[in-house]
Length: 448
Image 1 (cartoon, helix red, strand yellow):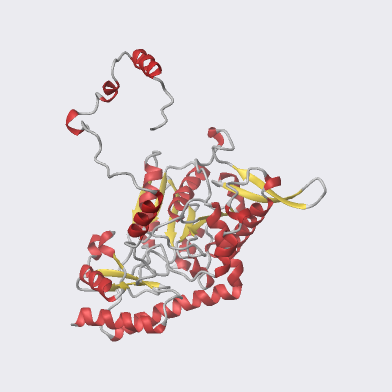
Image 2 (cartoon, rainbow, N blue to C red):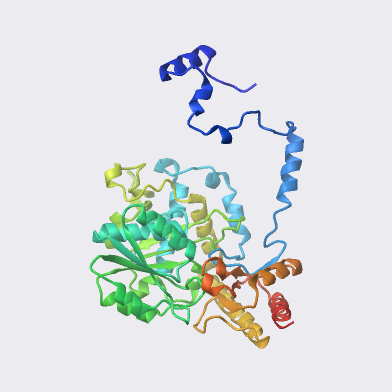
């Protein structure tokens, strides 16, 4: 028997107050032809043992990087995770606290988040970081809204070489609020067309946004972007979707970014069939009070001891809506802790080494494919991801599954004019043998 708190008398009183006599009348606005007129056809109830067995059976249908050699990327990358990450996250004091509203009871969590912020500032070469947001896409959208607040202007310009799903989120956030979003196309070499970007700037433009490496894995023209930022008053928003690249590539602060955001899933967070993710958000200190989310700060207690508190929390749950910088409800706290443990575990030298391994292995595979007459789509420098030309992407992906490969991401899903292209990602988890095996497979498919 279900627990229904309302008695029949209660129900009659409620219906009477609404001026109706039967509960069915509550649904009279729904067309009869789409209303269910009979009981739901549900299977018989199961015992707990049977439910466990059924769930296990369904879960075995999932196949991912444990069953295949994956070359999928496009914003979610398969990286090695030290065992220390899972061990520390499994401790009760880490996974049980929801959010650090009471600093006296949450010093451990606040300390780690403070370290997270410090690490993000060092990696991105920026002055201030918040304690994370939802994911990279929402971080970019919030950065655009922040730029609009700072400048009191109406328009943001974004590169079409930014992750397509990120661009969709930006448009959803901004256009629904009455702002304009312009897109600048990428050139034939895969880089953002900076000349077209400069021509598109106007007195209404609050900021322009780029991703580096971009969606195609291409390293953007950083000197050109810095030059453009320096000769205009337009804010620069930089997005880093693969932050492992910062072990080698120029960080956003070094090329004069005003706001720098990114995706932190590469930092010790498993793929998990799609989530959760970790939004990184940094900026110049002068814009700190326009930053969304929460910022942990260092202070001293009444005894003069070092302690941590939520210094700024300009979100709706902490402040009047008129003064809130966003309606962000949480900050993927556990993911931020995972990222902190990951970075502390590998250290600065380890981080650089992993970054180098990503670069070298990706370029090794590109050379092996070249030996098999498989061309790169773009000729520009790339990091650990690159696009290749193929005759039939669907055929390659289907054959790949049969041979044990997740053979990449078909670009026609996002760019119809690149229908004969696959995006390939390589990380430190790929060994030379698997890369050669994959190159042979592609060679057979394309040249056979």
